[in-house]
Every structure is written in structure tokens, then in C-alpha cells.
Length: 110
Length: 110
DNA sequence: CGGAATCCGACACGATACTG
DNA sequence: CAGTATCGTGTCGGATTCCG
Image (cartoon, rainbow over all chains, first blue to last red; front, side):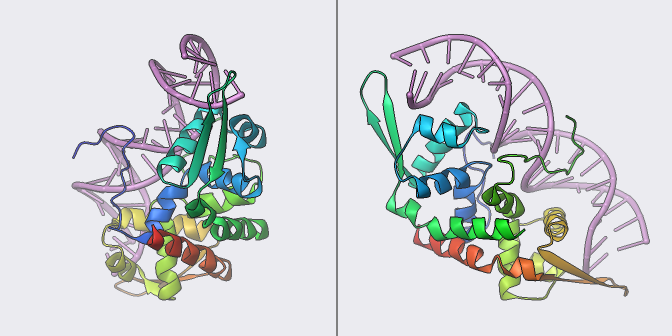
């Protein structure tokens, strides 16, 4: 079975809900991005950059793309010069709130 | 900066609690293993294998090792022939319960 | 039974440079 | 400002084999 680049590999445990969620927030940045958006409901690209200084532009754009594709993040583009975009959580994204907060609480105790 | 194999790469956001948690349950299997252990508090290696048929022995052993190293899973070895091992969650591991369950609930709705 | 060692391909991530 | 293109590297995960 040959896979194209960028395709999701995980068939994993077929339909395992946990795996779905894992894949949705996996990686070094997605969960943190969601966390930021929970506390700053509407965020421009550059705002996210400021809040995540260790995340490169490339990674930020990439992860936002995946999050958007997964229906977690909404993107709004203003056709102005210079361009302006706004990111926010979808209702489905907001439902991740408790999980993300739980993750933060757990991490703090470590 | 050279790293040995198996060492954690993530400096990420220095000390970000979310990142800590992400790293702790990252990968294709760790969260699912924890989930199994939440529902089957004491589990032999082969039991875990049966419950996770898509996870190879290698991966299972590897992830259990990481989980043990992170203080999430406890391992008990019986020096018998044939060998027998039992895995269970530490108290810290059990604290991940709400997070894991939250992840499952979210995944089910998707 | 419960692993560890080795090999290998796929992918995640990062640095850098370029674009509308 | 908000991205994309290209490239290089390390890491992850799977297959297989070997060990106490």
C-alpha cells in the first residue's frame, strides 16, 4: 500500500474514538494552538505567532490548515491590503476545551 | 546539540503544561493503552496484546516503557517460568482518566 | 511469555527563501 | 501580513529476528 505524502497514515484501531482525537490534536503544536484560541477566541495569524514564538510560520500555517480541515478551527479572510486573517474555534473545537484544560492541569502537577 | 536515540526532543514551549501532557500521551498507542488500563486496572502483556490487535509487540513494549518512564504506568514482574508481567496505572496515571475519557467522548461525536 | 536488536520507509519538524 | 516552496534531518512506527 503506497501512500501519498501528507495523507493520514492511521487506520489504527478502526474507528477508535480515542485515536480520532489523538490524531486531531497530535503533534507538537495543535493542542497548544487550541489552548490559545480558547483564551483568545479570535486571533490573527500574527497574534498566534506572538503567543507561540517557538513555532515557525511554516508550522503554524501547517497546523492551522490541519485543524481547519478537521473542523476544529474556522478561518476568516479579509481581502484587504495588507491581508488579514482571523482564526477561531468552531463549536466542535470548543468542545475540546475540557480536554485541553484537563491536559494543562495534569501537566502542571507533574 | 546531539541527542541520543530515545531522548525526548521537545523543549518546545519551555515548561508548557499542555506540551508536557501531549508528549506524555503522544503517539499512536499510548493514550489507547491508558484507556485500556482504565477499564482493566491490572493487565498482563498478552492481555494488552489481545485488546490491541493492531499494535505490534514491539510497539506495545516500547510504549509501555515510555509510559513507565513517565510514571504513568507501573510494572510488576513475576520471576516465573514462563515469565509473567502485570501492568497497571500509577496514581498519576489514573489522574489522566478524565482527559482520556474526554477524548473518547469527543471522538465519538465526530 | 515477554521482551530487545536491527533494519527500513514514512513522516514530522525546522531553516530558509520566496510570493501575492 | 499571511502565507507557500524547497530542502534536510531526526524520529516514529512496522516487519522481522533473536534472547532469557
